[in-house]
Image (cartoon, rainbow, N blue to C red; front, side, top):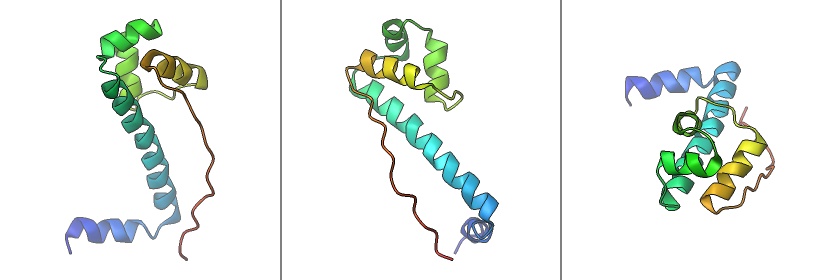
Length: 97
């Protein structure tokens, strides 16, 4: 096993590390979804920005994970890409103790 995997396994025993890691995973899940939806719509960041009535740099920040978008912003994103925003709540996974 690699040293990195060993380190990750060791760090993962710390509840604070595990929580922070899981929160980042959720953030990157949103980023991946935004990029995928824009690409599927066949739009550049600049084209999407025009449809959203914002700037290309704002779209870049959204897709780069450097923004915490509001529901209103996500609705504008969905409308501009011809999609529908759907927010769901799922049961939390219980970690093995």
